[in-house]
Every structure is written in structure tokens, then in C-alpha cells.
Image (cartoon, rainbow over all chains, first blue to last red; front, side):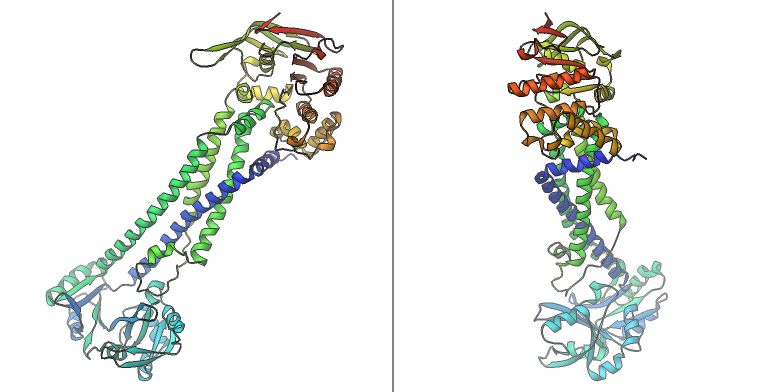
Length: 395
Length: 222
């Protein structure tokens, strides 16, 4: 039975690509790089968006901070009991935490105090107290650290313990009891968990004081009302709702997205320059070849089919290579250079891995931005040449 | 079989200038005839061949081949006509230099998506017939002029067309190769093909296989 797919035409198209090897390899490389850049931009944006969304979702609904002379001070833990009397509030937890600057690596760690038998304001902490006994850790002066912290400390030879320098200059030795993985990379990587008592000692915080208070309101509609009630009760506090935090996170993200958008535009611009160059005309040799094929009996549609195969093979290969390179670049190599644009704002952060986020729409979007446009840019000038009078072309 | 009726062909050079390549000519060529169009360069011989092969359309008049008005054929039908009925041997051969001998010869068959066995049989037949089989894998750019011409003839012949057209076939050949070509023509005529050759080579004018010599001058038939 005769094959409906004209393999002779496909073979001719492959031969045509190989005949102009150098030119087509150049196009393939440039096309692959552009596709890879476009895809990498989409993948990094998707990953970070996902990461930020998870972080934002994990934020407390209301955070109450004591403000004095425009600066943040420790707050009385008794305020939490007062807040609990407000209708609609289910939990008010005083948090004891702070940043500890790790000079050897030039990064800040978040040191968070955990009370074993207290309501935990994060699900991830609730899981941790099941795994580690923070009362026992307190008696041994031990801590549980995030993966990033462990790596940074190990690289400075603090594999089993670390000496925290207290505000009065004395040292507090705390041993590493375990490593945890948080729900999100951004959140957990730079975190150190220990008993509240130890955190107070490291930061020289008085008993009965907390860094801030987080408030849980089961009905999200009531968050704004509860926040304004707290503000009325304690005018010397700053009451931050999760909505405010979401906006500030989103602002950072939007700014970074702008940088990526610029990269994206540059990639697209370069791609369209190539397309424009291709669409603006064929070389006299290419025109002559089309004329010869018509003179020996090829129809216009045979020529267009052949050109379609040629451009499809080239652009689809570039698309595949570009996609694979982008996945390797982003998820295996962790997007060197590009990634810094996004996570680089946080010199304070420890290492951060881009989470794998696969969206089929991204693949379709990159496909439609590249392959059909390249095919059209090849076919249109070929169609123009193929519809000229043969005699005019080959003479 | 081939009729050019009151045909004029004018080429537009630009908005204000045009050149009349053929001026109201009429030619009739019978089936199986070998006709030589004689004339100097620019006399209009090649234009007559292009009109017969439907590579161009007349400005006035019509071209009829096998009762088909080829001058009125839409583009795709003209391609089909060339594919089935015409074998054109161009002056500069018009081969694709970066393809091998066999790939060049197979080109007219490619759009028809032929059966592999059938295509190979046709290919072997013409390569043997025109003595080019030993070079089948060679790139045509590395062939001599005579070999390139044999490839062009084999390509023109692969579909076994009824009409063979040759434009200045011996212009780039030495005398020995020109005589070889004439022998090939003899074979084609013996097999019943209608042949039209445009040339100013005197070798053709007194050949026993030539049925008629038509002299073209300044776009007119003398």
C-alpha cells in the first residue's frame, strides 16, 4: 500500500537542511538559545510565584508589634490574653524570634522560639513539635535547623554545635539536634528553631516579653475588623494583616517580574529580528531552486509542503532543545545568573532551591511564540517566489 | 500536436519600457517531429520553448499542445502539464548542484510520491540509457559539462514525457560531446518523442534526424 505521507518530500526537506548545514546550525543554535531563555524566564517566574504564594499562604492573619519612637520593641505577652477576648479571635500567640547575623557566611538566620505545649501558629511547627521535644531540647541547649542553615554552618566547621554571641558579648553554645524541611524553601531554609527560653537568652529578651503576637481569626471576613479593634485597644502597636503583607510581597515580586519582562522582551525582539530577516526575502539561489522545481513539474503546494517540513524540523528541534535546556538550566543548575535577579534581593537569605513547577501552558505558550512564527516566516517568502512566473525566476 | 497561434510575447522591463521577444508568430509541430529553431541569441527561440513548456504565458495569442490550451492553464495545472508531458533540457542544465546525480534525476517524481520499487526501476532505466549510472552518488557540481548534460537529459526523461525540449543543448559542449548528444536525440526520436531544439549550432542544420528547421529572427519566423 502506498504511504500517504510523502517520504520523498520529507527526505528532500532533510537534505535541503543538510545542504545549507552551517547556516541552519547557526539558526538552530540561536533559536534554541532564545527558546531556552524564554522558557527559563517562564519557569523561574512560575517557580518563584509558587514559592511566594506558599509563603504568603503560611503568613499569620494578623501580626501585632509594639512600636516606640517609630521602632519595633518587645511586646508584653499579656497583650495576647487581652486580644483573645476580642470576638472572632480564636488564637493569639506571642512569638519569640529574631535575626541572627552569621558573619562567616554574611547571611542572617531567623531564630524562632517554640514552646512545646503551646498552640503553634504554623502547621509546620505543629509537625515539628511531634518530632522533636523542645522541652528536652531546652534542657540540653539544642536546636533544630533548616537545611540551608545546616549547610552554611557545616561549611564553617560548625557541624555539631554553634556558639551564639549574646548582646553582652558572652557566648551561648547550642548543639544541633536535627534538621528539618519546611513547607516552603524560602521560609524554612534560613530558620533555626529552639525553645523560647534559649531564644530569649540569645537575644537578651526579658521573661514575659515577646517579639510580636500573631492572631488567628477563623473567619477571613473579620480580619480587618479585628485588626482595627486591636489598634483601638493598643494605639502604640502596629497591626499588620496578611493582606498588607501580601501586597508588600507582591510589590517585590512585581518589581522582579519587570526585570524578567525586560529580558523576555529582549529575547522576543531578537527572535523577531531573525524572523523579519527571514521573511524579508529569499536568496537568489533559493529563488532559483524554487524556479527549477516548478519548471520540472512541482506544484506551488508541493514547494510549500517541502518548505513546511524544512522549517518545522528546524524550529521543532530548536523548541525541543530549548525546552530541555531550560529545564536543565533552571532545575538542575538552579538558573545561575537569572535566579539572582529574583532571589538576589535577599543577601540575607541562605541557599534557596527553585521548586519544580510544571505548567503545560508554558510549553504551549513557548511553542506558539516560536514554531508557527518561524514556519510562517519561511513559507511566506517561498510562496511569493513560487507564485512568480517560472521563466522569470530561472532565466 | 504543438501549435503557437498568432503569439506575441512582450517582457516589461519597467513602467515605460518593454521588449517584444515574439511578434505575432504561428508555428505548428506534428507528433514525432524533430524541429530545430535556428537563430542568434535574443532572436526569441528560448521564449518559444518557454511558451511550449508553459513556463510563461503569451501576451497575445495562444499555445495549444495535444489539444490543451496550455497558455490558459492555471499555475498548478501548468505544473502538472510540465510534470507529465514535458521534458525540458535547459541550456545551463538547471540542476541542483548540492544534490547527487540520482537525487537530481528523481526530482520530477518526488511530488507524485511514487512507489519505491517503481521509482528505482525508472531511475535505473534512465541512468543506464544516458550512461550516468556509474556516477549516481556523485554531487552534480563535481561532474563535467557533458556528464551534467546527461543528468539533465535523464531528469527530463524520467517521467517518459511525450515532448522533449532542449535549449541550446550543445552551447557548453565540445564537438565530441555534441555528437554524443545528437546520438541521444536520435534515440529519443526513434522512440517516437516530439522534439524541439533551439540552437544556433550549425551541427544541427543538416542532420538526417531533423525534420524541419525554423529560422527565428527579431521575434519573427522567417
